[in-house]
Length: 254
Ligand code: ZN
Ligand code: FE
Image (cartoon, rainbow, N blue to C red; front, side):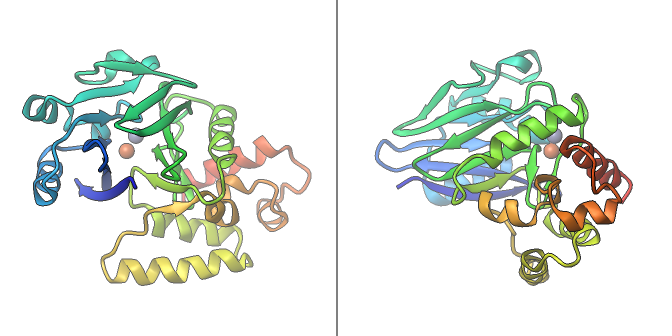
């Protein structure tokens, strides 16, 4: 059974160590820095074999070169942004399969936060690494894409099985949830989730992973069909993408 361990990095980033015990393959997803990853590997007696990057931003690739130099791990990242991924060895895009030992990931192109952003979906392990595209109750900023592209990218992720665990790039859950509540104060699932999130954060614990099913019920960026959200935005009759775009605009200034 594939194990996934969370490694806090920098201020609010998470890297993830994925360990496939049958072949002892070990990947790290989005290492912002090398030191906490090295410590986490050492503590578990693991040897790194792969580095997976969802996108080029420094807080997701900053540890690439040092980790590669110290472990010989192969770096796998988005083909569309290969020139911006430090040390990249293997370029992947939509539909490609990535093998971490016997753990297989399917790659999805999910552009908009950056033009070459990808997700890794491990079907058997029921896990998806969403980088800065889908956060718990949130979505990434549109640095290199349009609202329409981000809506398509989020929709791709939203179609994964409901019990898929969502491992995102940052611990932004609590502030995302406050924004979500401002749009859907009557969403009982959202109110219940925020109680749990507030409790976890008060104890200094991570709120990750989420699941696709929980995101569908509580993430405002997946809910442009919600009557309450549309009433709050005064957009009862607008197209889905317009509602999504307005939600994203409001989050920028929340
Ligand atoms: Zn980013
Ligand atoms: Fe980031």
